Image (cartoon, rainbow, N blue to C red; front, side, top):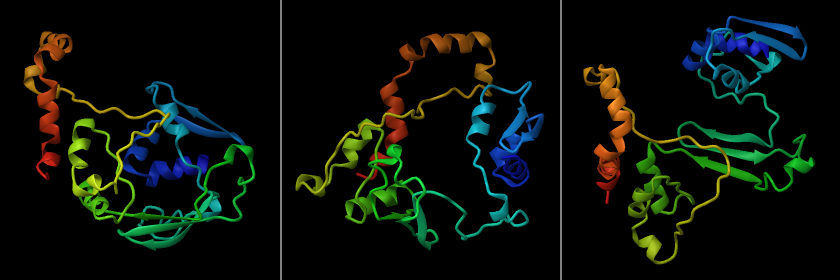
Length: 219
């Protein structure tokens, strides 16, 4: 883990470099334990470190780590990379030697022998592919926009189905935030009144309509 921490601190993604460089000190106490000094840091840092991947030192090219590559990384998951077409598609095949395939906790999972993932430039291109029958699933999490997106002939003849699927895991939020760098919010009383009165003074339907207008113009 210490090898990964030091590597990502120097050559990781920008947000990783910024976060890990704020850690006061990291030291390996033994082969299984690393101690991080997080004094003075915010409460999210332990979560950030907990999400850090652990890279195998013997299988990592440190010198060229920050260079783009299509070489599959070392992994121990249920699928292996079979085909890569950059910017187009990725095919994963089930790993017959997956070490955890017989564990009770994995029962009922990873049932597909092959998974094909196709990439599209943006959400609009992806939805057009769905309408044309090139892919099987199109997610939508804005309720008022989803009905408009599904108003096309395929739905009328039963070729598409709108369903709400239970998720059961934590999910990010969507919303609006005031830009407090603007001079109008420099007065603390203005911010206080906005905090209390935003629901009374802001037409939320109008805000949603403006946010979704680029999608609505397509139909």
